[in-house]
Length: 440
Image (cartoon, rainbow, N blue to C red; front, side):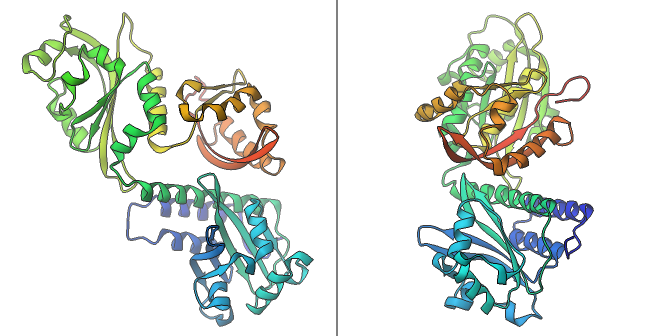
C-alpha cells in the first residue's frame, strides 16, 4: 500500500486539471509550474522538478522547481546545491541519467538501498536530505527530453504497478505539451508558408481525390490542388488571389460564420454562371452548375487565432459523395497540419487489418520506410509483437480502451523493433470512423 492518498478519482481529477492547464488559452499562465504543482499535491511530495537533459553540453537544466518553503534543507535545487546555479553536470548523477536515457522510470523507495553503481547519487542526494525519490522520463520529438523528479524527505512504501502506469500518463501529457511548444517556437515563417513547403502536407494536398483550397488569414487563395482546378474548370493563374469573403456562391450568413471562426458545411448546386458574370475567377465550365458538397474550416494556432482557411470540395458525378469520404480526407489534412516527419497507418478492428498509405510518405525518406514494408505489418499482433516488452503492456492497455469505445484518442511513445534494433516512435492513435453500433 502506498503511503500517499492516490485514489483513482484523485488521479483522474489531477490528470484532467493538467490537461486543462496545458490547453488554456491564457498566455500569461505558467502552465509548467501549475501542472507540476498538481502532481506534487497529489503525491504529497516535498519537491518536484522538471529537468531537461542537455546532451550538447552534458548538463541537466532545472526548467522549473517547486519545493516546500518550510523545509529549508530541501528547498534548494540540486544544481544550486552543487554548483550555485540552475544546472548541474550529467556526471553528477550518472546512474540516474543512464536510466532516463534508456527511457526507464527511476523509483527509489529508500536512498540507502541504491545499487553500488549509484554511489555518486547516494552521496549527492544524501547531502540534500532526501530519503526517497522518483524520476519519470519525458519524451519529445522522438527522443528523451528529460525527466520529472519527485523528492521526499520521508520514506515511502513500495509503489504499485498502477502508480507506475499513472506516472506514464503524466509523462505523456508533458510530452504532448512540450512537443506543441517546441513546434510553436520552431516556426520562423508564417504557418501557411510552412504548410506549403511541408512534404507530408503537399503529398496529401496533391493526391487526395478531393478539391482543396488553401487561404491565408485575410481570406486570399494561396494554393489549390489539381483536383479542384479540374472541378472548377480553371488554372492556377486564373484563380490564385481570389478572396473567400468575396465568393458570390456563399451567403452573407456563411461568410459571417467563416469570419467568426466557425466551420461551414455545404451541399449545393455551384453556379458557374454567377462566377463568370461577376468575374470572380476565370472558368471554362460550360455547365450552368455542378452539385458540390464540402466544408470550409478555419486553421487556428494554439492561442485560437486564425492563420488561414481550408476548403474541401467534391463534385457529384451522378451520385452524392459519401460524406464519410470527405470527413476522412479532412482528418488526414488536419493531421498533416499538425505533424511532420510522419506517416499514416490505419487499422480496421473488424477485419483485423493494418494498411499503410505509402503514397503519402516523404519521398526523401522512402528508403527508411521500405524497412517497415518488409516487416509486413498486416494485423494487430504483427504490430504489437514489435513493440519492446517494457512498453507493449502500456500501449495495449490504451489500445483496448480505444477499441472498446472508451476513448477516441491517445498518444504513446515507445521503442519499436526495426531490423533487430529498437528505435523510439511517437504515435497518435485516433478513431475516425464508427459502425452503426458506435464501435470503432
